[in-house]
Amino acid sequence: MRAALTMRGSQTGKAPDSGSGTWRFESSPLSSPSATLVRDGYRRARALTSAHARSFSLAAWALPPRQRDAARALYAFCRRLDDLVEETTPSLDPAARLTEARALVRAVHGTGTLPAVGAPWDAAELAALRDTVRRFDVPEAPFHDLIAGVEMDLEQQRYPTFSALSGYCYRVAGTVGLMLAPVLGYTRPRALHAAEDLGRAMQLTNILRDVREDLGRGRVYLPQDELATFGVTEDDLARGRMSGGMRRLFAWQIARARRYYAAGRTGIRFLHGARARLTVRLMATLYADILRTIEAHDYDVFRERAVVSGRRKAALALRCLTRGI
Image 1 (tube, one colour):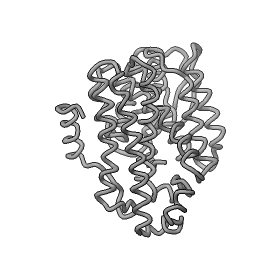
Image 2 (spheres, one colour):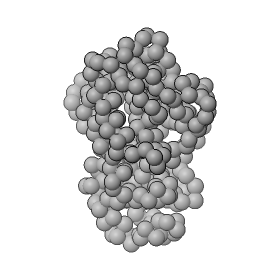
Image 3 (spheres, rainbow, N blue to C red):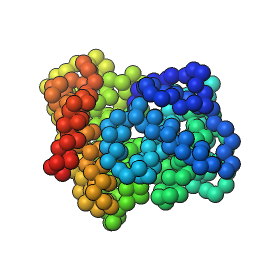
């Protein structure tokens, strides 16, 4: 779904201090992770999150340090998994790499050694991930569901209905909410359903924001039956041809995404502690503002990418702090 940049070079084994793009590491055998390696893994995950997930990074700062590090370790896994598919070279079989990812998940949740693996995986990040999984008892199933969602991008480029798309959104985004829930802490299972809904809302936001980029990869995530209902063709999307039907289509999608955001927010009250609740409010608020930006651009997602400025994010964060939105 995302446009992954590559930044390969001579930094093998070293985490860059700053910058953007995707850096790659060579992993080494990881039989008995030392405390130093785990700390290094959290440091690398922090650098990766800061460079590629600024809204998530901002929201995570509200968490206590251990929870913040754990959230970053989970993000690093998700990012590397995305890199695995989006940046796999022609000589590498994506299906085989996903099989490797499944084996890694089993190893991370197990008690044996972690295997030596190559890019995009990193031994230190995996050590930090195992530490997170053990410390917060993060379940294994959402990881496998996430991999299944990534696999869908290899096998399916169109979705006939929203029902079909909803399953994809759960796998690639709702699962992340289920991974984060034990880190944040929750009092009722309802929080898990809300986490899934919030993930779906964020993925629907991605889909609307990234229509042009996804078309470049041969993918159309907007449901085919809804395109037809609003009289929009794939040629219209490819040409960026705005029309009344196109605007009504995007307005419909935005309204749906907002319903999922509202459902996701209902779980906030079941989270442990004010800082966890603030983190999720921040994530939902910052990401949902992309929808407002799309509306401000008169739904034209083809002319320029809808982004939330740093100043706007700061203002929204202040509102979350002072008004509890």
